[in-house]
Image 1 (tube, rainbow, N blue to C red):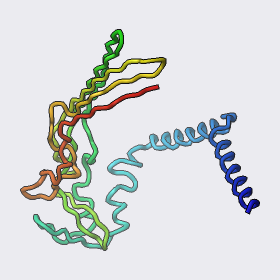
Image 2: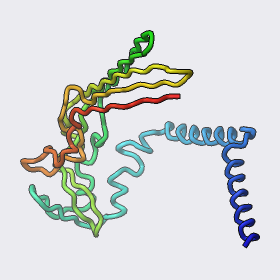
Image 3: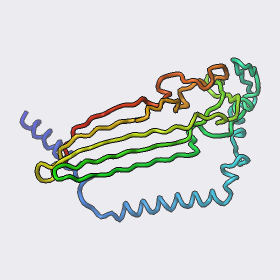
Image 4: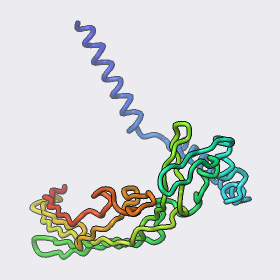
Length: 240
């Protein structure tokens, strides 16, 4: 029993020693630096090759564009797009490529962020006020409907991709902090924060709205589609 216990203790010690040696033992950085340099040169070479004829690789008329790649999967197939308005049975390459080009769902045309803070040092306490401001374009969306191809799910776009867009919105947050140093480097204080000061609650998530072409198109499908309402947070601070 003592031999087993000794073996287990020795094994654990070796594992911990190896872990410490691998992560924390100082060593020369030359090998890692060389790997990083070579990796960067490979990425640079790849991007330089693309720039020789960028449109041929990624353009609308590239060697293998979206429509051509889909022909390999469903060249002679027909797809049935049901629902209202009815599309019916059409060639699958036409169904998967219809209105496919446009703004992607995460496109933000404009975005502005401002972060600022001001600290007022008093004799026994330091007070910091920190407002933040965000303004950005709404996300794009379009009328669409899912359909199946041999068990796989694809999307038919009734309107051009990204042809509609959620409203632009802004959010103002504010934080106020007070700290003092009772001794040495230790700081003790309190912090209060207000998120969404103006309580803006409009639709900001294009993944939680109705995209089916009917009277509910663009309407939110859950509370999470809207910006979170005004919220408060209070924090006790101890820094050292």
